[in-house]
Length: 147
Image 1 (tube, rainbow, N blue to C red):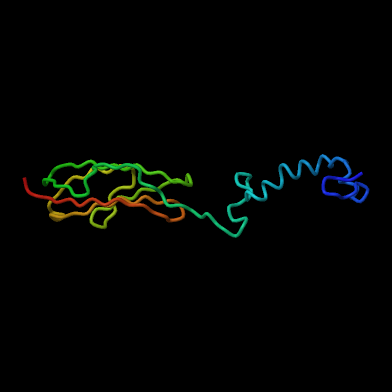
Image 2 (tube, rainbow, N blue to C red):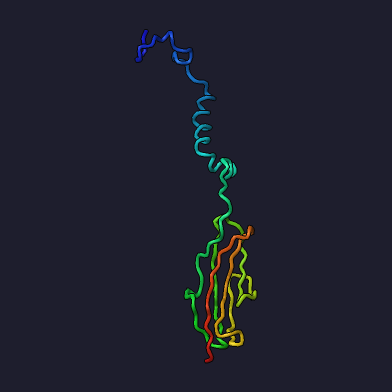
């Protein structure tokens, strides 16, 4: 008997003559091989399985107040600032507020009692850090005048 390509069936290896594959081979080809080609994504295998490392990602500032980067304020006025941030790696975040380079707070908000004795032009910075030291920051310039 000849096959479609003109090869006699008796010339074909045993497996090609209608014998079925072993069930484990079928399972291997349906489950294991696709995992190898897809790089084991989502199966608890480290990100550096193929010599590539995703690495840590810095935090992202998602919202803040006030929205203006430059603010005018009077001596004695109280200004409220807050920030929201997230980390793509779900790492815990640390917040550090600095006024003119000096640490003033470490939460998600800061209430600034404006004083002209600190200068007429002041810089408020909040830095959001993850445990590996990656950071995001927001800066406000505050122009202080007498009332």
